[in-house]
Length: 310
Image (cartoon, rainbow, N blue to C red):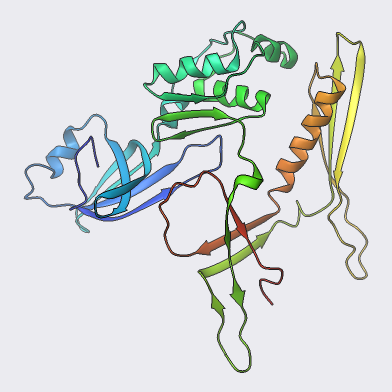
């Protein structure tokens, strides 16, 4: 749908990219270009100031929305007889809104609710209690610094240990989903055998990637000075993952140091654990093609068998 009008009769193909939390989702859609179409031909696209796009997939009368956003670019390809749209979800509105406001006497949840209202977004916000000025003082953030509203919202989410993202026109600001609540898809791959000279899998194009830099032992240090307690803290957390290769000495560990003023010792421990987990999650990635499922899943784990490949 474009500006509330169904255009599936012109649709040739589409793509939707759902990014991780803190980033905008993106889309592309290709439509048929017909010079003789007086309603939705070239003149229509030349006259639009904005193009609000919804991409929905379904069977019969039931449709699941994959993305709702606004086109950034409209391209008319005359030789191919195609109209190509590309854009982002409504995160783009917050990315393009610049502000110097910091609301030091209000909580993070109150600020996010206020920003959602400015853009006609529905806030799905978990209430918080810490005045945001506490974070600015701790990080020495100047209240006159100019930033986008999205940077402000993601900054507050990081301070609270929350995730922030848009789903349609809902602005979510809440705790990350628990691993125990995740929907799990098991990917199975069986290599060729003498009796069966072909591989079998419940999907297609299974590719496993591993970042050998992140695969080293990881050390995270959080250093903080708490002026109220007159104490300095240095917390170290380590993930020992590297194995000694045959005939090769161990590679040096990857060390990440974060200086975060104003933390208590307990807060420094929590911050070190959180950042160690976030860094380690980037070691392995999976690319997989399988049957489509448009049912809404907020957080999905891909589980590989013990011996996924030979």
